[in-house]
Length: 241
Image (cartoon, rainbow, N blue to C red; front, side):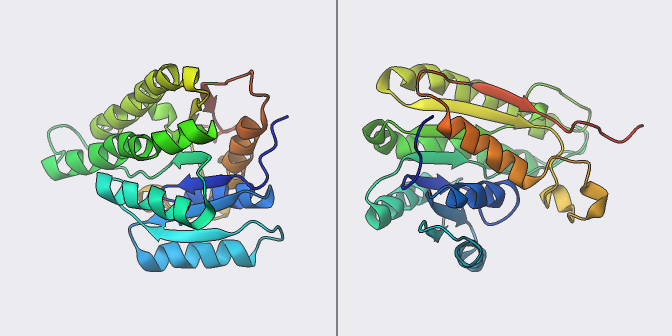
């Protein structure tokens, strides 16, 4: 098993939802984390909450960053390295969804989804690749089952997640000879705030954010000789239709 205590992770979109769940799981394993958000208040609150609810020596910091802006991602990486001295793990999690028939899908909604969900993943690894090569680190993107299963009204979201899945697999082939491991996680329904949802008891059947966090920990702790490059994960028992 790979030791991950005292490693350092950068998690985009880590102030809530899956990113926050991953941050919690990593802190519990002694991994220092930096969570990003476009909102300074959200990033700061998330880091404060994480630190207040963690019993290990690992610490969280909040960083204001926008994955749609490459310079912003470069600054986030620099902040992590300036703070902790290294960067071992990048979790490209930031994402959003805009849905509707192609007849009604607004151009600005298309651009927002592609720029955040796909180009944002590109910017995240591009900004951090030198640091990950130095640390022989790990890059994980959060794709979706929508990255292999298309649906009506999902033109923008499907395109972005199909792109993330393919992009990450190509990056895996690019970086494996440098000792950098690369995986993409493709969840089904997760209990988050995505698309205006408010997590509640009604979401108990869904994957929970701590489940994705545990999955990330399992990937990071796996023996270096083994690389699960693409992982599909879904609720065990969805509601009957």
